[in-house]
Image (cartoon, rainbow, N blue to C red; front, side, top):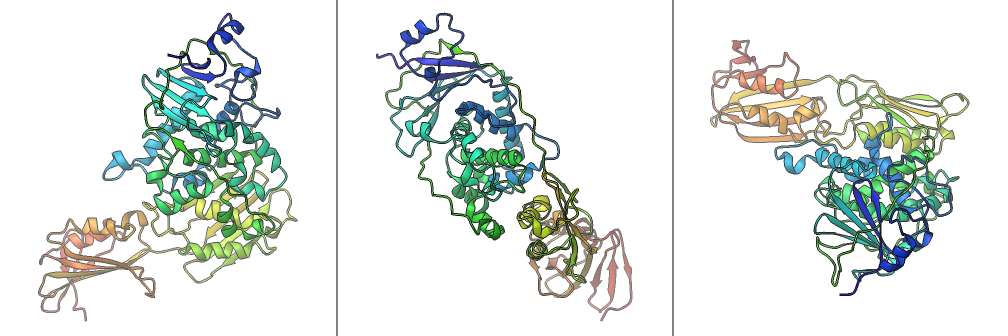
Length: 556
């Protein structure tokens, strides 16, 4: 059996990384002590000394930074949480709106928060070398699996005995570094908002491949969508978090978006060009759309490629450390929270208000007085009162991505109607934006019950119920009414054209139910003194309270 090309092994604490370079005997002659090698030719890409445990916050200014340095930058951006930074924005964009959902009726499959946080924790342990697992990672620059093409930059597979393998193809070495991309767009605030400008760097490709390893992602991440537009569609249009949390490029682009946002102190994490054009047409007006990348993702099954020979991890490389650069000033988003009685009802109205607001010069302005969308918008440059909303080209995008959608968007459990509670966003460049709802949304309910021959027919109309209790389509109320005996014929509808009520629920119960309906509507979010009126066969109405029933006057 032919001995494969020499394998240069690098120990990152308890993890072993293997690089393919020369013949075994040639390397042995160069490394008599088997401890250290600094010759640039030993690496599958330009080498500089670095440490897996180094805590970096800035891309190296060296002309050829190591790709693993940049992969670590991305990993640290994603897992080294910084107080005050709003991670929910990027996570929602790339991992789907349910990324922070903790369990359901079947929590094993739907505890996305648990799965994703566990994945981040495993990645963090890998990067900082504190895992106790005996895992080995092998990196090669020769195409041992014969899978490389002009559009395939790398491919990976998990082998036996906790071994994880990645081949970096010839096309990989032709890709720009993340440092190249960061430098290229350093002086263009609009281009900094376009994720295509920062995808497929060597650092990101390597980081993407790490997410394929079975001891980092569980369930093991595959390639269900690749490149920014397709990954965005996966999380927003197609499968959502259900597939995004097991897609390697979703994690990779999430990290890129966070890193770029923090590095530039920009107004928003970068998004696909077509998405940016939809939310901030002014930013894209003078841009040339990014060139479409012709790239192909490949992940092999958990087996070795054809003709594979198991490597011999007998030599390793020690990596030195560097001093971290100072962290950038960070954005801070302080949300009012999905609670209370002050919110704007219609998201689209709020977004339109913010776009109009950003075109004018008043620092504070109210919109939609005497309506359910009555609100106040504020934008100011801290330390420079001469600046107005019109002076910030990122104003509209900042409003939408932070205090409008970044605070309470995408929470189908606690905010299914997507009401806007607002908040205050302070950017690293000292622009501050606030959205404050001004009208108190009082909760009200009207509940009647009468016998119609089939049973006790109930009709319930309500407005401003807490969305987390009512449910997206009345599921919360249906669950509470289900405790009443003999519930059948349940229907629920939203009533946007009704002057006074937001929704209408109806159905039947077994006759003679007393306190159950009143208790049910209160448990689903009605005021504590809410009660149902029950009409008897003779026209008498009874006020059905939580624990008893009392006669009241006839009701017409």
